[in-house]
Image (cartoon, rainbow, N blue to C red; front, side):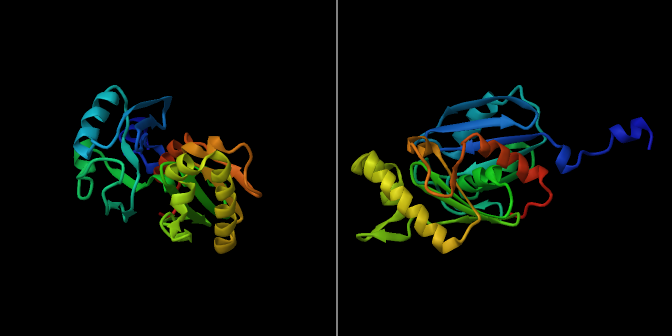
Amino acid sequence: MDACTEANQPASDEQKIVLAVDIGGSHVKIRTSSGGEERKFTSGAGMGPARMMAQLKVLAQDLRFDVVAMGYPGPVVHNRIVLDPRNLGPGWVGFDFAGAFGKPVKIVNDALMQAIGSYEGGRMLFLGLGTGLGAAMIVDHVAQPMELAHLPYKKGKSFEAYVGEAGLEKRGRKKWRKSVFDVVERLRAAMEPDDVVIGGGNVEKLDEMPPGARRGDNALAFEGGFRLWHDAALVV
């Protein structure tokens, strides 16, 4: 194959530049796999998908990318959003993101995207401490989002009621940390992971980690978005 012909060949997924979009209740953050700094804008309860796309296009107007990976704060099944998020505006279910971007788009739950970026092999349980409780499991490169937040925990309340933002504000940091340690131990016993990663915005409020757990980093959500396109071994 001569140089001219090779230059005209379409890029493989591993070669494509990915725009990773991390959608949160307070901010939408973006970064591309070609490098550069994180960029962000404020989200909030009034933000629906059309408004997000309008702001995102302005923020990313000078960025070159081939494909998009999105971490969404709600349930996603087979690349389709199935429920509007609690902390944002309505209209997300059925929204045509590929059409809005004019690029191929892969969408996963936001906790799963950070889990993928944190994964180092084997059986990993990811727990995201933020507004609520995000959860995901990756077993031998097979990634699965998990809806553990609303399972019953104590006194008729859920895991999320104790270790989410509301539990932290209501019960104070000392009791919240104790609950985090207990919840991690219970889920470890149930899921039997080799590795536990605790991420999300509130992980910084833990002075020490539960036994056997390691600290995640929100920036790894971008790495997870890149891996959605670049890691051929990953099954989502």
